[in-house]
Image (cartoon, rainbow, N blue to C red; front, top):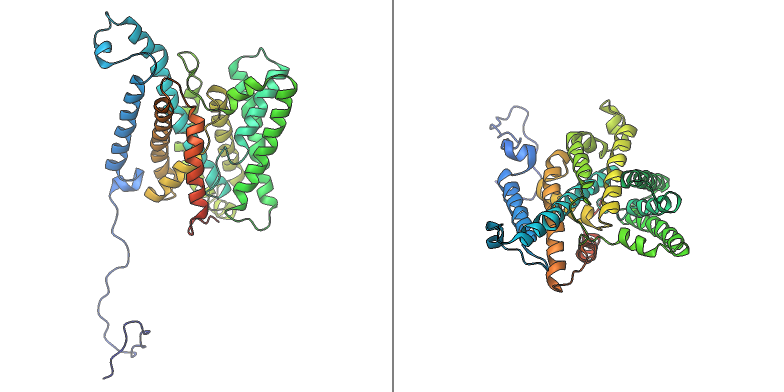
Length: 359
């Protein structure tokens, strides 16, 4: 009987040939820890790493703060004051900003169905900055909460305009979508810079466009807890964002309203971006880098990804802040600058990857 190559197609079996039992092709069930939030040991290890970075952040700065000084507070009142008034608020602001911006980037990528989109490559942050400038010109004395609400409205309008432009593009690729967002953001930024120069508000504009935590003190960062609440809300409705990322037709077939899910996602992204920009300024590429790294670990399910994105986003911002505070100590490099350098390199790597294609 002639031999047959292993690569040759199978020959048709006789009608009454006896067939051997075949093993089930279904994969073995995954453990519960992997189904809900990725491998729990790895997530817990990442959380411990973020806590370690936060502990280091509490001890680094111009003023001397050490564990020995904190253990004897009666003899080191200044160290305790620095810790309570400056270091703890700054560390909490870093964690909250990183968590919320990472999750906002994940939501935006699902709504736009593109891996290269985030609030700072889609015009969302630039439109929020424009809103802050408008409210500063027209009503400079209103509270910070009202300013943030106006900025959220502008950022929501800018994001909606971005998605509307994407709908009008007949053939959009993974590279065209971020280019459209960058062009739209550049238009918003040009308008903001023109009016800021015209009315002598360039210094205020720099505070919004440069992510800097050096001025964060107790009483000046608490608005970021609102971004944390929005992050929790995003986790609660994560399954809807996962379905919406599969397309409008698929969402409608499941009995869900695709426009409502998109509107909810836009509201979360816009408010998170406005809160962060109004409090500490723009921190680019967090919502781009972190979700792409997480997708390589746990996949594209939002409910599984959001805990990872929150933890790694906080760690990324803490690490960038530590680098900026150590490189030129006692001076500081803004977090937005460090994150921009690292994020742009990762962004270029993602663009040139062969398998970096999104719908």
